[in-house]
Length: 363
Image 1 (cartoon, rainbow, N blue to C red):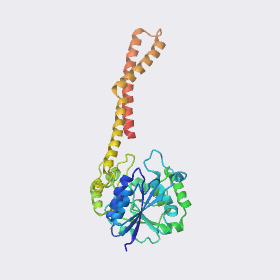
Image 2: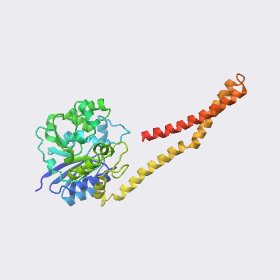
Image 3: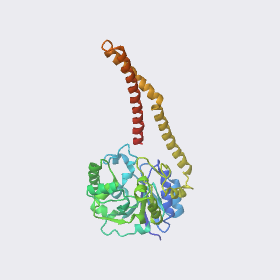
Image 4: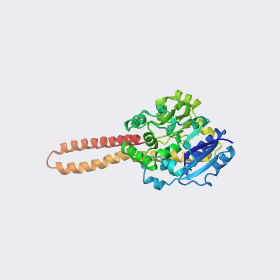
């Protein structure tokens, strides 16, 4: 009989089609264990996950859907409405005390924007000792992330491919302890964030696995800090590729920039039942961006600039004539009006340049 391996992932109807690749690659590369995949979701049903259940049956694994109450969570945690992180990602706060069955004593985390490229058993079987968590080393985290954790008195924790000593966490912490740590994080960061919270709560009791042997993140910031060659070398030894993103929401299915590991993701995606949707969703995203650019161009076109200049000039002329007639000569009024016409055009051009620049910064 195969040993079991407990894995946690969050997803919902909106992004299940992307999680399919993470689930398929997990099942394909871990045939030596019976994977119990705990899918934490606010809205998924077994019918929604019929394709994923078929995968589980094909590879000899099991899927368990755990219901997460987002409305309840909103009473305790805070995510900026402009941020793209779904509140469901914070279900890990409730994982140990309310969501997982009592018999689960350890669990590993993956995320829906990943592709598993190796056997996870070696990391899963690491002895915790007196540690609460095992995760990839901090060397792959951006320097500002590491500096922030140091400033608030915690250790750096990477959530993807992290392991949790569920039994020990249940014994030593209550849900209230976790939410109190989140309050401290919110005071410093202004929002909830599970890596900060658990890094603070588990300080001094986190074991690290070198990032090159566990997980590599692929996005523009990591590419700049780590370099292409290093990322490619890590892909040969890492167990999982994580396509984390920022405000641009760059992913393999939304390639705002191209990362090396995108090729691997698409290899697993080729026979996905959602394959057509990957393209159609990307076209929608591109179409929206295109419409926004066209609207911007329309609003700050040179014709509009000249119209703006004309309106400003009419207002200025009216004021000037009202003030100056009878006080200065007609020649000086004419020169003044010419100068004001030039200034109106220059001001409107400056306003256009400023609008373009501000929009560029925003995007």
